[in-house]
Length: 352
Image 1 (cartoon, rainbow, N blue to C red):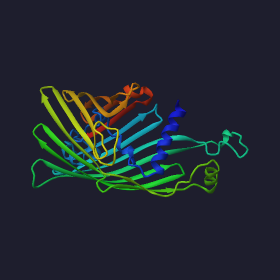
Image 2: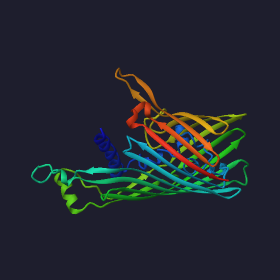
Image 3: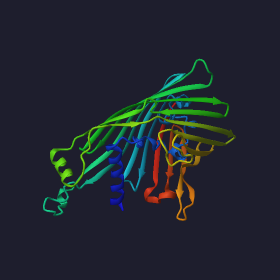
Image 4: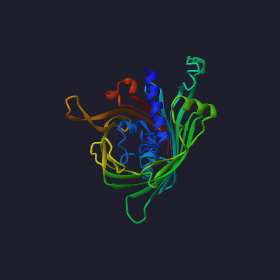
């Protein structure tokens, strides 16, 4: 089973690397922070901590502490794929906050079977080596209040992308995000425009002459250096929070808006695609939290030819103890079974 999973993941990495696809840099769509992923990622208007650097940098101003530090481990496919996140946010002034985030997503110890079969057609297992397919994102965030519109916050990201596939290929990329948040009593409205300038990855392939000869002898084409583009994507959302005595309730709804061609989303067309997410959180004494959400709505064709909609549920819990918060989320277990589930744990440190 693990060999099959390795093969599928490797194929996805290679396809994303060797072509100019609209699904480039997909590792940046996985999400960060167990609290947010317990809400099914519906956080563009609900986030209020260091993870806002990823979801909506304008919301960094809602951080109540002078400094926050968070680390996350997201393990998928029985630990074959890992998605790690480390970020810190610090208040520059009463009206400005900055953050730095690092994301690593990758598969390690992938078998390299390029030379498994020798020129005589014999299998030589001693020729198997291993490599890693790893993506990195380095994100710098800034948030500030506006002087002209009360309760309106603005933010932005500058991000550097580094992608490495063993010794065979690597890429550098650069992109910019822009965001805003508006607060109205218990409501918050968030807007996030990712890759506002179109993010690019410039790929460079470094096959040795022996590798090239082996690829050509087995009927494979040699990839050439190219530019991979990530088109802009708009996320719109709203959240509502209510606190009564010891109990708190938060609800969040958002939509991804894509215009890069037809996708299999809840509302799908050649010109406009809407992908919704919904999350809710129940809290007790602001210490214990239970979360749930739905995302990844897709149309599925049944055996009888009819269509139905499928979705991915998310569940999560959290515990806040003074300056430390521990969160756990379980994603996609109901659709893919335990081997395909996401087990996400994050630990946050808060200094007032």
